Image (cartoon, rainbow, N blue to C red; front, side):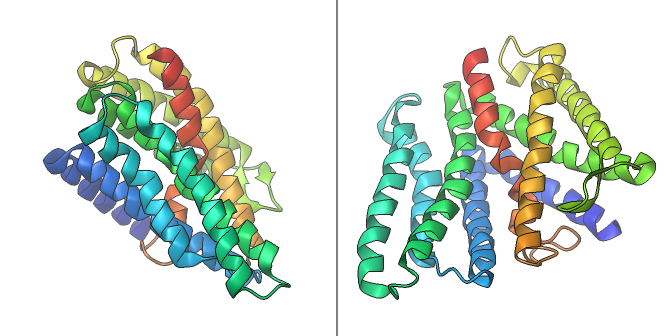
Length: 280
């Protein structure tokens, strides 16, 4: 527990310091690095189950899917219109994999190779790229960056709140076959803490958030995001259990791998984007 707390404090310090000095560029760089590392760990699980994804090709498309929309929009376009590049990149990835697997893969493993590569690209960089879309949504870098930070804080404090609430009050197992330590009491605590953190940040940093994003609205938006965060975490737990792994890696002491860090954001990112799209 101590190593987890220390790692969390160090991570937040490093992230906030990077954002303070380099702004949105740091956010895109961090998200790109996390997407590649998470995809790497996803592929490790896939390989343990006998799949053979196209790693290098997928990593290249992952970088493009996260970074290209921001930089092309930043320097060549105005607004959010160029984020349509990401679905196009995903389509090109399917085409590239189809060409490559016909020449390089055992015929008994071709479909599995295609499936593992594309599922990895959809589940990790495609889902996470919605945080970049949030960054671009408001036309003001400071507001977009603060909204992204708000979403990340709501998701991660739901994790922390669920852990602490589960340790203190947990009695009823939520999904013992997937994650035996998670409880309904922990989930409720995580949601409530997430709502409180969301409202508190909206009050404290209201000048840097959308005008209509009051503490009450922030708490209401945090509610569905926290619920999705719990489901997102359970999905990763199901993957690890299927691959017979406790953690996806050992990059971060006390936390595990990059996937253990981004798991709560993968499903949350597109939901947050849709909600803020309607609020903007």
